[in-house]
Amino acid sequence: MNKAGNRAENAGAVDMARTEVIAPNLKQRLSGVTSTIVQLVPVQARNLGIAVFGPGLPDSLPKMRWWQLPWLLRRPETGRPRIWHARRNTEMVAGLVLRHVFRAQIRLVFTSAAQRDHRPFTKWLIRQMDGVIATSLMSGRFLEVPHKVVMHGVDLEKFHPPRGPDDAFAAAGLPGKYAIGCFGRVRHSKGTDLFVDAMIALLPHYPEWTAVITGRITAEHKGFGDELRQRIAAAGLSERILLLGEVPDVAVWYRRVTLYVAPSRNEGFGLTPLEAMASRTAVVASDAGSYSEIVTRGVTGDFVAANDGNALREAIRPYLADPALAEAHGAAGHEDVSTRFRLENEAAGLREIYDQVWAKG
Image 1 (cartoon, rainbow, N blue to C red):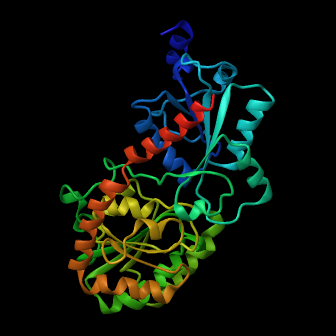
Image 2 (image 1 turned 30 degrees about the vertical axis):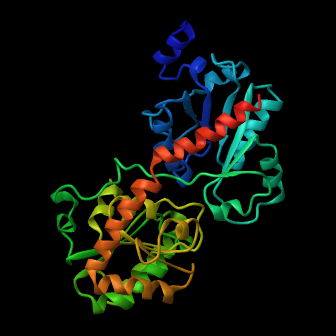
Image 3 (image 1 turned 90 degrees about the vertical axis):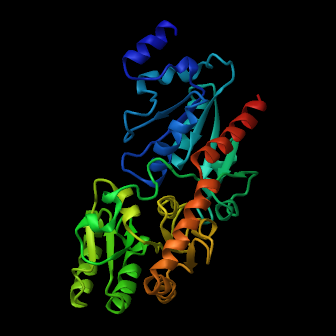
C-alpha cells in the first residue's frame, strides 16, 4: 500500500487508490436506502473496491472521508473512472457537480425505486446518468431511459429462521400462542391504521393470537399514534394489540411472529416482506412498492390492493384460522428468498451495470 493509503487506513478511511465505486448516503436519518447500503456494501466489497460516503452509516463499512474528495479528481490504480452510485436526487446532483464543476473522474449510476411519474427535474437528472437501475419491474415502467432491473436482496445471516428459545414468541413474555406482526415506522403512509383496524375486527374471534407493532413514532406522527392507541383501548384490546415502539433488534421479532403484514399505502421497494420471508414467516402485503413481485400468492403468502382495509382483513383471516397454513407458507417463503433474493444476486446485478459503464470508457 502507498503512503497515502497508509495515512487513510490510520485515519479510518479507505485507500482511494484502490476504490473504484462510491456509494453516497447524503441523508442523516435512517431510511430504506440507508438500510440497503448497509446490507449490500459488505457483500460488494468482497470482490470490488467500494466505499460509502456521507453521514449516518456504521463504522464497520469502508468509508471515504470528506477530506478524501480531492481523490475523485484522479482515477484509481485500475485506470478506469470511479463510479458514483446515487440513489437519491441529492446524490445525482452531487455527482453532476463533482463531474462538471470540479472535473472529477467519475461515471454516474442511479438506482430508482420510485413507483410514480418522476418530476421534470428528476427526469432531467436521470437522463444525465451513465447507467440506470430499477429495483422492480413496476419502478422500471416509470423510467424513460434504458435501464436494468436489479431487485434488492436480503441479509440471510441477519434475517434467518428461528434457532433457539429466544426466537420463540413465548420468550417475549406476551399473551397468546401465536403472533402477527407489523414493523416499520408508524404512520399513515405505512398503513399501520389498516393493520390495527383488521386486528380489532379479527382478534376477538382468534384468542390464541396477539398483534405486535414495532417502529418509531416521530413527533410529526404522534397524533396518528395516539389515535391508534385510543382505537385499540376502545375495543378492549390493549393487551393483545401492542405498540412496542423502537426495539433493539427487530430481526428477532420476525422470527417470533407466525405471520407478517406489510399494509403500506405506498412504498419505494420495501424490504420488510423479504426480511420476514428470510425468517421463515408468511407474509400478507398490499401491492405497494415491489410487494406483489416479492410475494407469491397462495405459496408464500398473499397480497391485496393498497389502501383496501377490507381486503387486507380477509387476506389475513385464513392464517389466523389455520396457523399451519402460515407455517407452510413461511417455509416456502424462506426457500424462495434464499434463491431469488440473496444479497449476492443483487451485488452481481450491480456489477454487471458497473462493467457496462466502464466498457463505455
